[in-house]
Picture 1 (cartoon, rainbow, N blue to C red):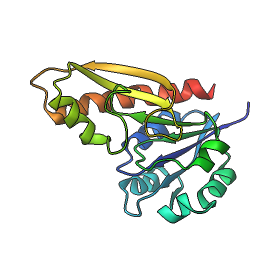
Picture 2: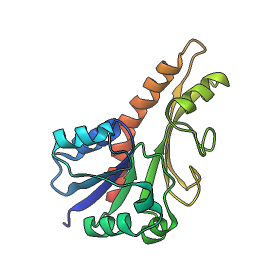
Picture 3: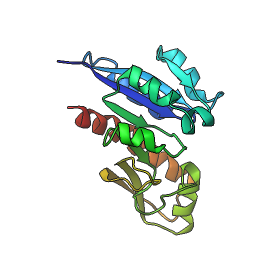
Length: 189
């Protein structure tokens, strides 16, 4: 069986990247071919060094105005591209080259609390402000619009009026860590 190749994009600490790498560590038929980041000082780079995974930095010009990132992806030959806390909109040339091969995880139950600027604590603060009684995660395909691609999977968690933004974030992270690698696994096979 051909080894399945994952490429991950991240902008931040890389906790989801590490969780995915560790999930597939003992699977000889899945490899993380590389991690790409748009932040030179992102903590995900330190995690990748510790995990012995190649991490590459690119800037906005390389991403949006050249084929640099596309060429890197071609060389890495991904079966699936995973946005794990990546905050930039994916350019059309990548969406066209990898249709239904780019997925994202969003820290809310889309279509609620999606769109530009809705990430991380911005989402959890909005959920709290609107006194939602549940939240969760959405794993979806990436298209040309923020958080509007076809939904692959959602998981929910109950909220209480006494939950702080930090407690909401912890509940959502727990869902991310539990389900994101499993759904990736299902999509690969």
